[in-house]
Image (cartoon, rainbow, N blue to C red; front, top):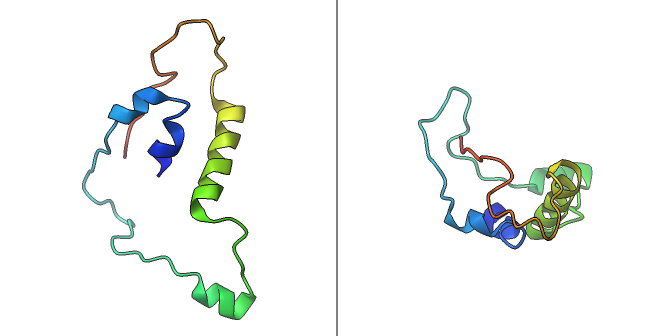
Length: 85
């Protein structure tokens, strides 16, 4: 979902694939998120659906952290190397 959300801004990401490595100490291997308990005990109600929240988060990171590039600079290379963990 993250890659597909970034692709309109960074088309070169279409070719990136995840790199899976061995589990590390402390990694959660079989996690199934469920906010039901927080809803029951705390009255938690999510404000954003996952895609909407990701889009807003990506917008923030791009605005705050992505290097600015001129529209006509002709740069086709990625702004930084991306590494999976």
